[in-house]
Length: 393
Ligand code: AMP
Image (cartoon, rainbow, N blue to C red; front, side):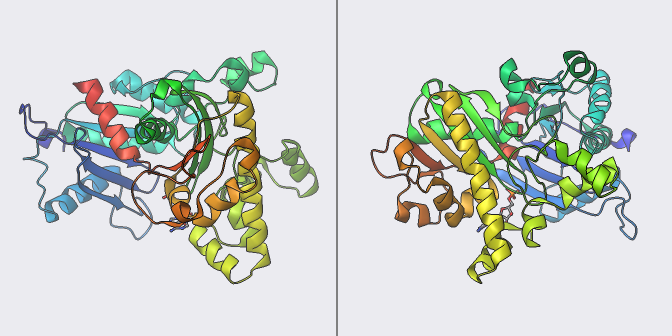
């Protein structure tokens, strides 16, 4: 394909979209976004890449499929003035605290960081390699960890021997950073208050879940750690467990490290407790009086309160509590449960506001509350498109 690459157009003016790519091991999500206006021109997901019986052999074939899908949507990438490609990369390790233009050295480093994110970074590398072959435009890597590179040492350091931590780059990195950053800025806009003045707790609750404490637009703590397994209870991930659980399961249940890793990442969380991992399904089971679903919901809520309380203490009080991502934006019951009984901390919601369905950012606390509680839709693709455009000019 390299002799037949799609060129960027240097065309000045008009709309120049950014192609945002999120490559997983067997999937490729794409969106064509205009950074300035936020207009999403097209988007989709190619699935089952490289799986047996799939006619999409690899990420290069997936990009060819994407190009076909876009053409079917009336978008011919050869005539679109593509500005750049922005790639979502999960782990930037200790190296990357902001987006970078991808060259061979950057790509090598992202590949080396696969030790820290074996499920994610190899796929990103494959996606980037294929996209560089397809598109003769600047490619930018936007890291999920970058926003949390500002964590102070007392929040990012695990209490393990320092020489070992240094040798293996063990620290709290945090993930979903692009979303937490976007949402913290959007919340300030919603409240029409300067970002620099706000102490915020952000709850990103989707398939993966994470909490962050943000002071003046700068992240000071977050619930995910060295890996995206730590912290809140998620669809299939346990979140926090006693670190002694690993040794105990090895000894008593005869599980290997790999089996324990799979157990805690893929078979635990809401799924492990209730048998379903999708939160909508969980809510249906709850409505039917299912006791296991009730316990799962309560465990999720208890863990969330635990982090809200922790971050209140770390920030010395908060001005804003924000819910975002699939569950945070949509689950009326979860938002009500997390904020219940927190009136003494200045946190409460208005039932009608919480119950109103909307796709817009909105305040759900009563008028004049000490702490604003808000629902702010995340938009990681637009955030990546904007950061990419900013970098390439
Ligand atoms: P995300 O990873 O941000 O796409 O979020 C996915 C999660 O959001 C899944 O657990 C969905 O079940 C959940 N979700 C999406 N829509 C709703 C809804 N209307 N009510 C409750 N949960 C929802």
